[in-house]
Length: 321
Image 1 (cartoon, rainbow, N blue to C red):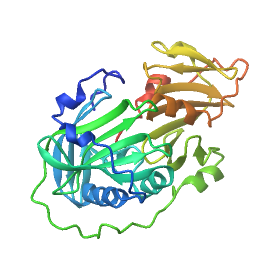
Image 2 (image 1 turned 90 degrees about the vertical axis):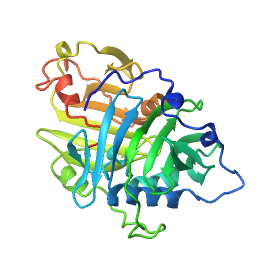
Image 3 (image 1 turned 135 degrees about the horizontal axis):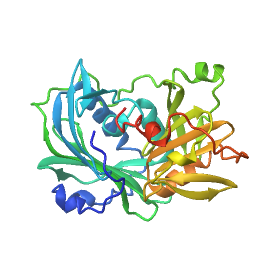
């Protein structure tokens, strides 16, 4: 995947050819989560139907996406599981949808168009009535064509959208719209804790643990509030300050966090004999609140040696894995 600077100022609505009608506010007289069944159907379609296209993101990536039923999804020819927390940008898992319904009111909006295709709008609304996210779902197939995440001021913080997509003539889904696969928590969380790893099940802002796995000497955690994703990588050891070229330091509660991107969505710090690297697909204020639930205790003399280095840590990050 080609990775460019995390924040770009783009005329996204014009670039993606989205009609103004798609920005209509949902009918507030509807108090039920009328949009949640549509998102469930869309998630099933993203897994079960063939499609291919080019996905543009405000993180600066242009991605070739292909889904082949029975084989799975590839992003830039890399196999990925669309049900994982970050892969859920296209096909949110049942756990993410459950968390979405718990944290937001999910309602239908007015129809619109994305890359020349008729689309249905679903909006996640905060408890104070402000929109948190918008999803445009292809009317004919159920494939998610575009997603926007908004910050507390109503500004688009992240967005992904197909700029071109090929979807064969759709056939009826094998699952009814209201069907929900059995919700399951992270299957390895308990065993990882038994191995001595310590990590919270929830983070501030309604972020729940949606995935936990162990790599070669590091722990990967995925948290989601149903709209945004915070990925956390944990290594035992200490941090090498000399390897942080291009990062800027920021004090926090007596400790130091190192930040690389302008929006503060890539962070690294040391605490309690561990090094934490966070990559967030979330508005900066939401990400800042969420990481407050992770350890931040300062340790005398911890700027010593971090075997893999910050750049190596971030090389593990794949937004769709």
